[in-house]
Amino acid sequence: MYTEIVKIIEGGLVNDKEKVTNYAEVLANNLEQQGELALASKIRKTLNNKRGMMVSLDSITTRPVDTESRMDIVEVTVPDFDPDQLILDQYSRSLIDNFIDSYTHRDLLLRSGLDGTNTLLLYGPPGCGKTTVAQYIASITGLPLVTARLDGLVSSLLGSTAKNIRKIFDYASKRECILFLDEFDVIAKLRDDKNELGELKRVVNSLLQNIDTFNNDSILIAATNHHELLDPAIWRRFSTIVDLEKPRREEIARYLKTILVDKITDFTFNDKKFERIIEAFEGLSYSDIKTIIYNALKTVVLSGRETLTNCDVLRSIYLYEYHAVECEDNFILFLLEHGITHKEAYERLGIPLRKIQSVSRTLERQEV
Image (cartoon, rainbow, N blue to C red; front, side, top):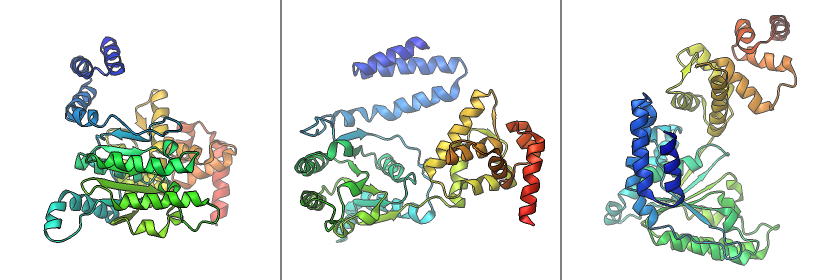
């Protein structure tokens, strides 16, 4: 098995796709014989999905670069995204799916005298699914995802920034693709911002002109965490605008069940425990939730256990939010408030029973 992995790496380094494919198939066969059926199946699925994508990626390998730094200013990917992984509230999901439907049936709309829909603006707090939505749309439409790299796009010479914007739009206009402008506010700020130079205002004007002439056969997606900074003229350039907020209880529940679908837990099918876990996650983003769960799963694996417990998850939440247990009383209080029993805290986290009981009595007095 190690031989196949080395050969795959060798093939990847010299861009020998046939070598990568052949040895990946051998690896899948060997894994299957060893009983690793899930991993073998995943390798074969990846191979099948990527075969048809190699030509499309090869056709767009010459990427634009910043003249000053010589850095690439776009990244090109073809996401292999499971639609079930996109968890949104029903209204946001409906807007996204309607956007995709309007794009895929744009010829029908044009014949009816209606303009096509190919510009989408996403805004909301960090970690709430903006990049995930772009990957989802790329996967559903089969279009390559061209992501603008702002570290290369925004030059120390602002005149070069406007040129880089033009390069990116020219590049995207030569092929059907999804142009994804993340952290959009960096280049789309209010033109009456007194703290900005006149040159940056010209950058915004250049951006507006490029959006107006964008290829109708491609999709433009912009995303920002700071929509309040956007120039008013920017909003009018987008046919669909979606506010992606932090997940509510229903979305938290669905997201947890999605990322834990093949994991053993002591709370997923225990309604009371599951409700307390959901409650503890309220106010966090999808990205936060995923990081916390994966941190907890790592602890389980490294401790030689198979079952993810509610104690593991709550401990992971507490450490994610506070970075350390500086006051054990506060940690115990957090656990008790989210449904952990004295026995669970003692047996699973090694906290002395006397200490737990002391904090519990304090909590009871507060409630009275």
